[in-house]
Structure formats: structure tokens, C-alpha cells
Image (cartoon, helix red, strand yellow):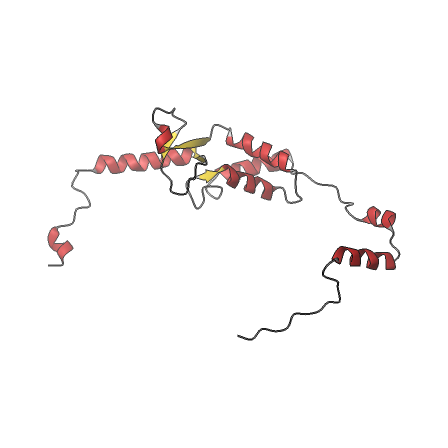
Length: 171
């Protein structure tokens, strides 16, 4: 398959920064003038209201459990980082994430081999991709799943959803 030739922009690929500094200096901007116009915008952190709204969204149906019923600490860190559109220090993002994970609505799910004899906040979980990392879910989602499993268990032997062998065999 033919490909087109790479474009040549006339920049030295080894030191693009040096090239840019030279071009900026040619326009009359020295280091002092450049620093007066670069990074002038102050970092605007989300307000407390915006952080609370983000927290509610992460817990909601469009949040961390929109596509999967569990999530990891890394998933939470990623979502909190995305909520800070102008960026934020890693320490602050991790601190916010850990505080968010510690709230009552978030439940830590222990791997099944560890959960035996665990507390009510440590629910059994068998996950092929767990790789030793603790997974989490929301209390409301776990309650919904447990209610559904309870209904299934209660319906066993009730004679519902039974298909006759003749139908299965196509007779």
C-alpha cells in the first residue's frame, strides 16, 4: 500500500523548543516579556457546589457504574481528574478520590477468597480481571442486585419459566 510522503515543516526535529525560542525572540519577546504573557491565567478549581454535584454524578446511574457494576480506585481517580478541567495536583486528586471512596454509599468488595467472615461492607466478589486490586460498588446498586438475586432464588422450584421437552426438542 502506498503512503504519502511526510510533510516537511522546516523545524529541527531534535530541538523544537530551541527553534520556538528563536522565533519568539525574533518577534521581540525576551524571557521577561514572554513570562508576562505565558501562564497568566489562574487555575480555577471547581467550587464546592461543583464538587458535590460531581460526587453525586459519580454515584448515579450515569457515573462509575453506568457500564459496569464495579469500579476501582484508579477509575475514581481518573474521573476526579477529569472533573478538574484546568488540571490539579495529583495529591489533591488522590485525596479527593480517597475521601469519596470512604463515604457510606461506596462499598468495598473483597475477592471471594478473602471475604469469608467479612463484615457487611465486604461483599464476596469473583472477578477474573481483579488482579488483587480492591473493587468497589455503590450501596444502592448492591442492594438492587441482591434483591434481584433474592427474587430469582425465591422463584426456584415454583414452576415458572419452564419449557416442555417437546418444545426444546422441536417436536
